[in-house]
Length: 267
Image (cartoon, rainbow, N blue to C red):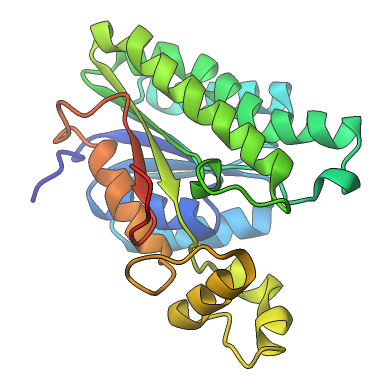
């Protein structure tokens, strides 16, 4: 299926690793020029090379701190200088985990700066370029935890719930302009950082943090959150769903919150 990305331009925030990188690689392979934004230049450079290997016509690797309004504005200014217009914005960044008792006011402010306001600032900066394009799409990545709460994710989930609401509202205001806006809610996804962080935790139970079935076994035991497919997901599975929603081929899906979670009780 031709998704219509040939000649398109796209920004992927958090595009140097994990789901963001998988999305950027997919868009590049489909023919889009891709700008990735993240903090670490080394990770950006490595990610940019991977995206170029997919055949992406052009790749921009932009050092942007998504918790800093000025840095975000500068990043999108660089995109505007390079491309003038923008077809796709995919926003993937989010804050760290933490239990309620461990978080003070500064932690909450930081969580909302990164988990919600980074998306607000990204859309604000990108909107003139999106409006200048022949067609435009926005996709945000929220989280399955907005429907399945976890005490360890209290601030993270609050910011992602706000992001989902923001995305839905944005779809209503931009729909008359033909800009489609959707939200993807990933379930448990086995990324490289997930595997590294939880290697010892799962290993203590005789489980492999890189194995999607073992990961879901641990999630079900620990949180009581099973999924119908019996395994965790992979970054490329999030990328596939996101790429369709972000594509020109998608002409009628907007304002949707799409679970990509291996099957759950939520609609």
